[in-house]
Every structure is written in structure tokens, then in C-alpha cells.
Amino acid sequence: MPINVRKLFKAHCGPGAVYLASELRQRGEHSTIAIKFEIVPEGRKFDLDGVLHQGETDEEQLENAVIKIAGIARNIRATLVNPDGKSVLHIDRLLS
Image 1 (tube, rainbow, N blue to C red):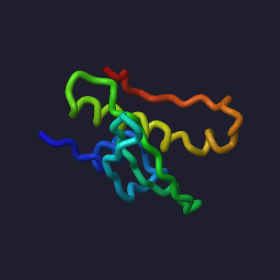
Image 2 (cartoon, rainbow, N blue to C red):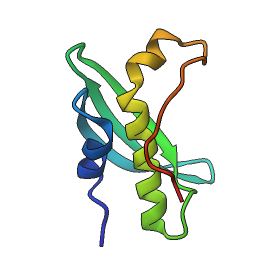
Image 3 (cartoon, rainbow, N blue to C red):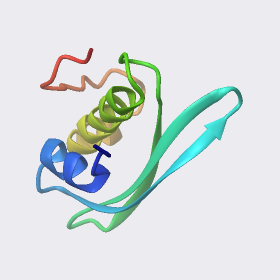
């Protein structure tokens, strides 16, 4: 069963982000999923990608990468406030 990236992203990022698009990309030797989203009400657009590597199957790897990106999207305001890397991101789901 294919993963519905939009539905999975929305389920894990909360109401502060609007899903725009996604695509599978190749970065060097690594496969990645790139998700474009907008933070409301500021209207800032972001394009984040995650490497597909955690999980036993391709679907698990894709799902885990989308959940990580959704966790970042949910906490993006905190990340932008502390761009020095001292921000803490909380992801609710333990990844396989």
C-alpha cells in the first residue's frame, strides 16, 4: 500500500503548517523525500528533505522520513527563534 505523504505529514505536523508538495529526490548516493510546506499565518515557505534510511522496507523508510520532517515543521518557529542549533525538536513517534 503506497504512503499518502500529504495525509501523513498533516497528521504529524499540526495546524501551523500547510502541505504544498512533495517529491522523491536523489542526493548523491542517498534517496530523499522533499516536502514543501508553508507556515501560517506568516506565509513563509520551506522545502525540507529527509534521507530514506530508517526502517526495514521502502514504505517504512518513507514514512519515517515524512514523520521527521513533520516534526520539524511543527516546531519550526522554535527552530527559527534559535538558529544557533540550541532549539529542541520533539517528535512524538519512536522511529523504527
